[in-house]
Amino acid sequence: MKNSINQLIRGGLMLVLVAFMASCSEIEEQTAPMASSTLKSIPEVLKSLETGDEGQNTNARKSAGNTYATFNAALGKSGLASVFAKNELTVFAPTDAAFAELNLNPGNIGSVEGLTDILLYHVVAGSVFAADLTECFVPTVNGAAVEITLMGGPKVNDANIILVDKQARNGVIHGIDKVLFPPTKNIMELVNTTPGFSILKFALEATGLDATVATTNNLTVFAPTDVAFGELVVELGFADLDALVAAVGLDGLESVLKYHVFAGGRVYSSDLTNTDITMFSGEDVTVDVSGPKLIDVRGRESMIIATDIQATNGVVHVIDTVILNF
Image (cartoon, rainbow, N blue to C red):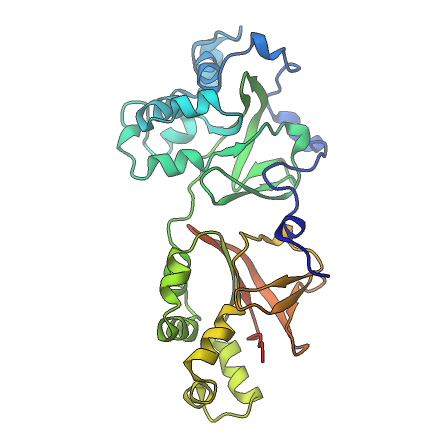
């Protein structure tokens, strides 16, 4: 039976409950959550971490680099301070030291191009405490996802989580030691600039689907390599790619390409389950996580050989065989 995207994507914006690993012992821990009526908003809590209003030694905190003045200044200069004060959010806040590594400080942070997108890439909707973290991809308010890993100490992408569970009235703050940067290329731009996808680029442009994959939001694309297209020509008994395209026509080629696109959301490797999903072309493909692999309507298998390549409008997984819907 077909499963909806809600069944395919597990967890949504919240994470399954698991405990932090013992290797998190170096993380700066916070006290148990207080009553919400006694708490400050997220920007106010960030400010209190800078000024020492939380009863901690300000000089000691500054010497450790665990202050958040630059992040807080960025909220003000981007116009996001009220958003961070009113909505229930989980914030992965880079320290001042993390910004300083990029030569950024409260005085010049406003000059960063794409500042709003960068800040929203540090935010997850809802309150996610340390005990809620598990290894998976989590959608941010930016639209792209961050990857949570726990082995060797908890991380968000390649940033270590160094402070946990600093509760605010409208959410929770975790401190991290690097600034996170969201993807900057759309799916078509990724295809254009990644070696090994020249045939896919040609096919998308020839059918006019290049504009679709460049501008449509929340797509999951299973991208065949040039080698995969070459093997398809041999499998179907054509002399070359031109002969194959001539046989199926542009409409047939467009249908095959749409069979490689899931338009129901961004499906990351951690979201995959054994299920059938309906692709943009209208036909189903079977997902088998034991590969992981895809099985097309002919019963042909395609291994997923690279995963979770993020774009501004979706995510790309690389496959080693062109899947067919005819």
